[in-house]
Image (tube, protein in one colour):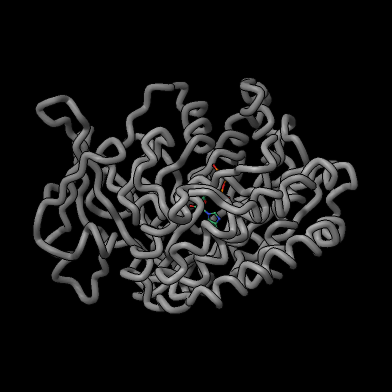
Length: 425
Ligand SMILES: Nc1ncnc2c1ncn2[C@@H]1O[C@H](COP(=O)(O)OP(=O)(O)OP(=O)(O)O)[C@@H](O)[C@H]1O
Ligand SMILES: [Mg+2]
């Protein structure tokens, strides 16, 4: 490998299990095929393959081997790399900062700061950069919220003496995925994702999402830690990152792959043929070091999403993580209720049974064996979770300070009638 890359290439760095520094794992090239479609190529570096205990970036698709991998999916960006790239929100911040809107996929990889999800880093030099040691702090949240508001309103960052500093502040915490405004902050020797409310939200999202995380925990689901911080009159949801671990030497980083990558699926909802919990559980059973635990856990998450009408359960809202050499289902995150008009039929984002995406108890049972659950056990889980959600959602929401008005607004999300409707295939 040459030591510098050209425009459509970059080096891929990785933090190995137990380490806090990057090493160079390989090189990614994004080109066009003969028909003009973007094609990505990836090769592991020879010295990486020959080093002590290298790990695969994606153990299913990019196995450790001396070969050139190619993909046409996801605009030519291998899922494992795309998972490290910002989504709608981070891209907006990068565009704002650079003043450009026509950035390429490699630009988004290179422009985003190294607080991105997972263990990878990207750069033009073969030599990896030193890991970042300084992060935004909780006390900067107010300023971050103001900057997020300005970006949402599409305003320029105020032309004040510290405008540049302000941009650095916002930029230094944007590369996580997702559409909501967010920033990464350090607090108490851990990294947290701060999710900001938007002025046009239908309810206090921070409080409601936190309450859903608490309710999911009551349903036996393994959740990321969360809490709500109030800054001035605004609530901010803080979700503790499960892909970082503080050590004296810095942060250890876990590898992370989204379900979109595991499913080899496209992110366009119009091309969602592979979006399926049933396929996902098959992939999970292949990659997980604890499939007997993770498969029933995924079943619970699917049931929970149906019970709270979380129809935004798209494949980037599920992930597997490897803090060491073993892959596991990550803690659950991004659980939001919705209140569609139909009370008879609601669809999840992923297929969840023989009746496609229908969020319905009978449908959820149809493939339960793939989740290592016998029908009786699966039925019991559904019954128990249904009772917990039905009986507790309101008390949990009020305890977590969701207002009476917001509770009323979200009330039709829970145990909607179609969940128990006798299903017709
Ligand atoms: N606790 C966590 N630890 C590590 N990574 C996380 C955690 N929570 C979320 N992520 C990563 O950050 C991304 C964005 O988070 P999240 O899904 O909560 O944001 P969002 O903006 O609400 O997303 P969406 O666009 O789905 O509404 C996720 O897709 C996942 O890759
Ligand atoms: Mg999300």
